[in-house]
Length: 216
Image (cartoon, rainbow, N blue to C red; front, top):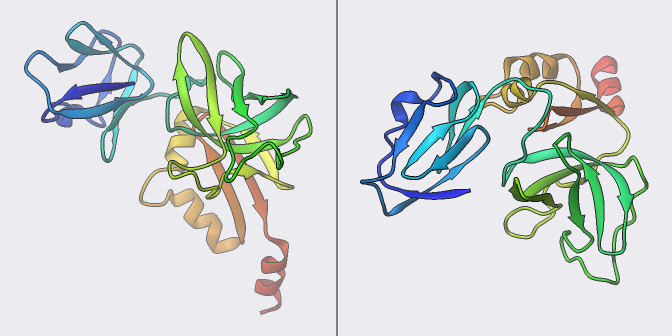
């Protein structure tokens, strides 16, 4: 969801605790700038209001959301998530992203996607994907490309191990600078990791590099 506004009066609330009913922005005197609303925020008439308890968070250049630990994930546009394929249809895959409903992944939502090179995913395949459409009236839509249409790091995650955690912990693992937990792990092991904002984490230990460390 995008809302037109001007200077950000939310700055003093960022990283502070908020509860449902708190007013984040008064839009009556604001214009000329677009902000993007993530989970936990809604527009009611001329104000932006909090709809779930947590911390107000901000990500450059223009996204605000309320961060809280919860088991049920609320999809938001531009979220990166880990999804599990539960069905394959002619035009799309049905993917479980831990949300209220299943998400659609169009068969053409891949870099260079055409009818001639439709990917084949077995039921249970784990995917790293991006949310491109999300609202309360429809199933979320996913993509395996970045905003420029490139595959980037998106796609199927092979081997490794996937586990569930809270959405709050997932955001902490994705925080900048690098989460201390991941820094400490990197000093001991060589690994690949993908963290979804929906509270799923995939990790793969790179055995060859680990053996090189041991032998070195």
